[in-house]
Amino acid sequence: MTSKLLQDAREYEKKGINSADKKDRPLFHATGAIGWINDPNGFSRYKDSYHLFYQYHPYSNHWGPMHWGHSVTKDFVKWEFLPCAMAPDEEYDKDGCFSGSAIELEDGRQLLMYTSVIRKEDSDGEIRDYQQQCIAIGDGVDFEKHQANPVISTEMIPEENDIHDFRDPKIIKNGDKYYCFAINRHPDGSGQILVYESMDAVKWSFAKVLDRSNNQVGRIWECPDYFDLDGKRVLIVSPQEVTGDGANVFPGFNNFFLVGHGKEFLDFNRESVQPIDLGTDFYAAQTLQAEDGRRIMIGWMQNWETCNYANDLHDYYGMMTIPRELKIDCGYVLQQPVKELENYYLKDFSHKNALVNKKTSLSNINGRVFDMTISISPEQEKDYEFTVALAKNADYETRITYNRRNNQIRLDRTKSGIMFSSLSLREFYVDDNQGEIKLRIVMDKYSMELFVNDGRQAASMKIDTPLVASEITFSSSQPVKMDVEYHSFDESKFKN
Ligand code: FRU
Image (cartoon, rainbow, N blue to C red; front, side, top):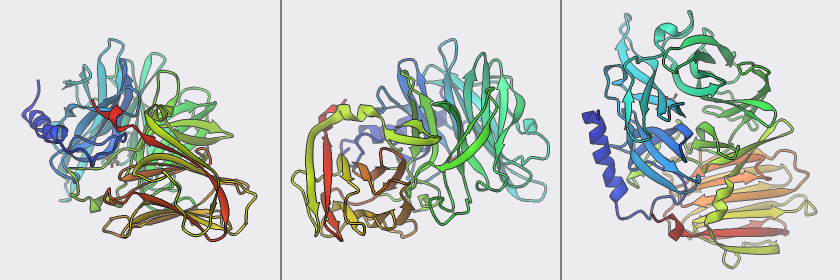
């Protein structure tokens, strides 16, 4: 039965779906139909499509009582909206349906696993969240919350651990069992992953603590994922209150691949911690396994540090990254945009050995939606500082700068229409590259994602620059030669 709250949300979001003016929507990045979104939820294959749910507040461009929005895609590039999947319409989830995951059941139904939130006053007079794990089962569009909810209650948190931070269940089937990975706080105050197991996804029991921060990998961890990749085992976590290391581990909100190995499904021996994305906007990544075996990751292109500055420039706020293919190379996770992106290219332009010195522009290289790779070979002047300026006109520009001497990249959105200065600059070191630098930039109107050296590093950044600013220029402190491969996109292929 569809509750009043869910009906209202489904009715309200039609405003966004039907709005004639979609010029300000990204072409191939998922957004909500209208209003606010955060974390990707339930990113999974169901029947012959890939489903994406998300934390959703349709009624404003700001976080509010959490619903689950819903979109679907066949190829990770072209998205379609489905009706809002869940509203906080039960007594046990009245303060929000928080993040979670989805899976196809043996009988062909789709199961959503999420965190129900209720806010209660404790005996000390403080109001605190109580978070428990719940399920809803449906046909890919309509979902019924289960009568056994919450299926993993606060009482099932092993004693002495925190009873308030307990959320973001990732459900995975292995053999004939279901497993649920949820975040919690160890008595030392920092994050840990609790694993529960079940034969039917309804009755659960505690299995083990998979891994924990020990106050070394940030404080609380959010949004776990767990999978095997090219002979390694990867645990994804989104930690808060990370202590920066002055190089590529940034303080505050972060997102890490914990790379390790293990024999049994629940053995996880961590070997390394790798930041997933070095840009200003990335958090809460989730993955799925595509039909052809590829491991595909999607993230929220934002984080909690900047989202207080959400604005009303459009009728939606927040978007996902482009889905990225993951691979392991010598214990290191590489990421690249899904290969399906190429099916939407319109025109290809290339420039070989183009000389860059003073400000240079190149014929046909401009626009706000493109996929462009700039390569600069190592036999060049050692001290150059190279800048590509995007989304540019007399008033605006978004800069990516590579400093050869320091081997550092700087992202700069101080002239990108954003009205706050926190997190406007990001600098990171390029992994050992022997002077070779390849910058793949995927821009989709109000966002850009950078993939350095074939996906060895990634950095995402949102901008608010008006779409009229669409020039691209190149400059360098010393003359360098670069190759540029540029692809524009065929907008007509995105029309339904
Ligand atoms: C992560 C997160 C989750 C929570 C959700 C609430 O961004 O804080 O832990 O479930 O957002 O919207």
